[in-house]
Image (cartoon, rainbow, N blue to C red):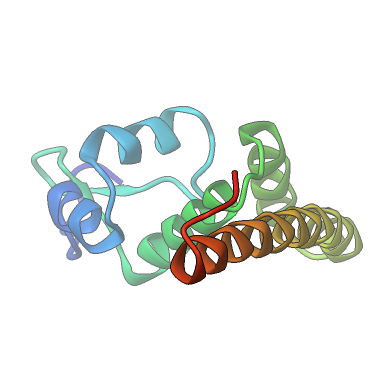
Amino acid sequence: MVGVAVTGRTIAEAAAECGLTTHTLRYYERDGLMRAPVARSRSGHRRYTDEDVAWVRLVTRLRSTGMPISEVRAYTDLVRAGEGTEPERLELLRRHRQRVLDRLATVRHDLAAIEDKIAVYAGTAGGC
């Protein structure tokens, strides 16, 4: 799309909107994690559309919940492949959701132990 008049956000604007660095956005692009190629202005600068930003936010959420890059890439590849891959996408997301739920259960259990210890110190200042 180089040479075409393209509107949208600059890489700095998209990065700021997504709470990422420009380096991270370039990494996502290089590593095949973008749903579609990012458009370029006539001068060759990246121009991020609303759809690009929405995709980056999804990738960021998948990563922040612990999805490995390899799985994000697999999901991206399935999305790019289009219709007919929905069952595989669904299964991939369901497996990830279960891992997140398992991790949440562990964190809740650990938090309860911390809360108990806070109660001990707040009440008697004793305990381990």
